Length: 312
Image (cartoon, rainbow, N blue to C red; front, side, top):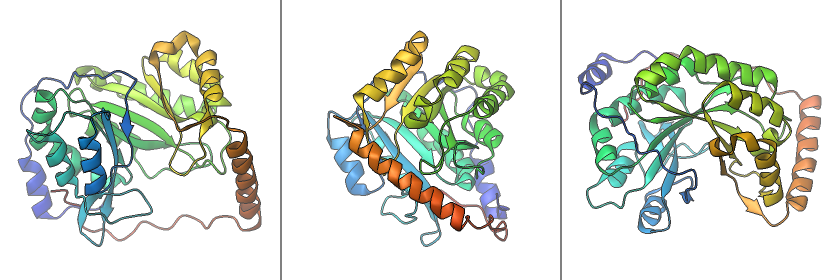
């Protein structure tokens, strides 16, 4: 992360957390009606105005053009919805309560955003009985040997909001990966062990997020993860990924039936996954052939050091 300017440091130092604020204990049911990728004022207004929506998911990035943290899903980095405007809307006195999931897409925005939430918005989450998920892909995973996030820093920062739900995932590439392996689960278990005392002290609930297609090929390693920890596992399908069938979800439930109470699903469903899976298989063949002919370029060096983003 880049070096913060004196002004930014002073601002963050001023965000003093109240001593032992009550934890955000409102852990909602696994069965939520989600509004995904609410990354514009119109999308957020529609979600808040829809009484059937119980939880809102959004993505956070740093916008160079706007010099601010905004709600956008990469590759987009501009939006009409700044970070604080989103939280002002969901935490407003007249707003209908809805649980919130913040999906961090860039590591250098986590600390200032968490400090701002803790000072300005945590009390509203308590009063309105809303759960707060803080999500990021913090470990390398299938098809993605590198990860931009420092997993330990993410856990330290986000667990400082007492009672928040940490959603920890692996970076994956649906086009190149195949399945989760023992090494992936070992890395996650090691991360959980390193922060176990901190999580217990701060009433931190942990959800591990995993791609449903990859997990279906590796249910054994998830049985080991669930047996060795008290985490919940959320199985998801990503933006732009073909939907899955109800039969695929049922196979995951059956394979992990011993842990049914700790399983959740956030996947796009289709009556049959045969055609989507055929298209996905062709696309994966093309991706792997392209990489064999022209491997991806080596990672770029770190950019020049500059001031840290200011979220509000």
